[in-house]
Length: 340
Image (cartoon, rainbow, N blue to C red; front, side):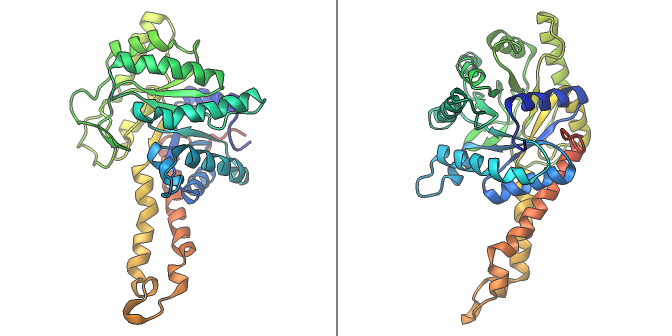
């Protein structure tokens, strides 16, 4: 059962919350980066999450048509086959989807899973993300209500981002300023609109200074202790302790102390993309520089097929990215926690 069933995915998230660890959620854009993620999880003996953004799905769909649904479905089906060879359990997730892409991405994918569930099968993806951070909170939550109802009916978990994360992610851009902090009032309005599980399970990407992209520790003021305030504020009003399952966005460059604080305060999923992109590309660049006259037919020569064969540098890239995934499992304390 390498691809989690809905029941197992819920168990994974429950185990993470109870054990105060989180699953690395690795963005993939190809079959090779998928293998790198699976390998990294397996080598860490950690279950995990593989996710596809709208840009990643468009890339997977091929540059001739750039169809996001085709790309996402193709990789998901591929994952269901190849993941059988890895001794871990993984969930499939779609990352950031803003309002203008819902009809071309998340809604069609929900429809596919709805048909699968009606036929007695499991959904194709285990969770989808609605990124309404560019909308007013009222509009964001109104759309989230619609999507949560459909997701719950298809045995899918919804992820919602209720307030902005700084930086840029697949065309959604927010300034880095004091608005990057979710308030207790925002969290209460979310609970009022979406419930606390009775309307369907959802993951909450709250903002505590997070920024997508590349930054060094100290350049962004993260306040992961804010997550405790959000949970306590909602718990006080609704009487449900630790009500939210939090997601850590924009974690590249975060210190280990910041990550630990986030884990202690309810984070069960942490998105990792920038760091794994670099880990994948770095050995390719090294290979090209070291074998310049082999990968290119310089001055009329024939080059060296063994050095420009994509399998040669591709194996290096997969290995390096897998190593970074394994490292992430260590940082998030998921190493050795796989479901037996």
